[in-house]
Length: 359
Image (cartoon, rainbow, N blue to C red; front, side):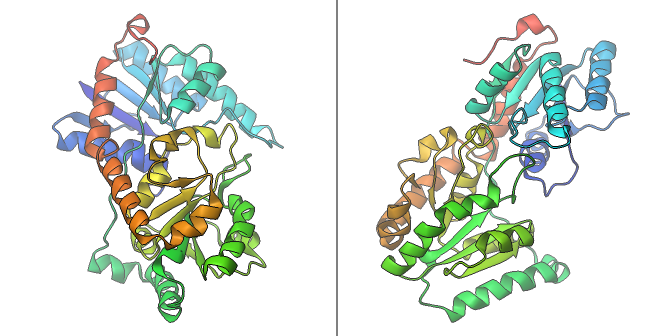
């Protein structure tokens, strides 16, 4: 079976393309499968995965492949692009309409979470079949000496943070808090702005339980400056960069994941929890459905405890990180997720009637 992924971007810095296309293709190839990244003009594959790619031109091209070569079309989604709160120019409504057309046109829709599968079923009534394939956790990246030389600007920004930490030993490793991720999404309230809600909790915990600091690893220093203006807690900004991300993460002890729960965020994967555990960080955050299986090894929906007593409980934190890492490396390991992709795509058939919705 010849498998091909057609990602919405070739930029491997974009998490959705990296996690759900490039690393999956690479691992399937390593397992001996005929898998590749597709480009128009390539030979028609047996199965084409439209990875978050559903614009009209791309869908038209994919449908021509199906008509000409019998290619099975699969749409992979990791975000709820049916939902938006603000759309001044109508662009997001057009995007949602294009997504509905694409979901109803392909033989199979794959979603990154069960909550998103339910949203697709509700928002795209013409969908023929849905399966869930979650994100695979990424191993920490250790840059080569050459990368340290060529990416010196990114490392200089990281060194500014680590120098501050070394000069402030009163902020213990467990109290070095980090938020990481995209600063926000079009038309949806959330992202970095979610930190505003927990500012009182952070400042109270610093007064009552001892000093702490907060680092933001993201892609908008302007948004960071706006959100953290006037905070009494020491804050730092480190631009997201593949050469320094893992080192920046491991310079901290606790990952904060506040979530403004809405139809967009409720469908998110466990990727941020997995990433935190894989880098050796304890997790304190809000809960969404994909976080449920981590409730025994993360502090969810209890910021007072998470920023207070939990921060000081070394034994509990170490046990939680060990348990979280075991889950991340097992069920969410790249090998397990790549094989899940293979199973789901192997079960797809050219006949829409041969597909059944996921249980």
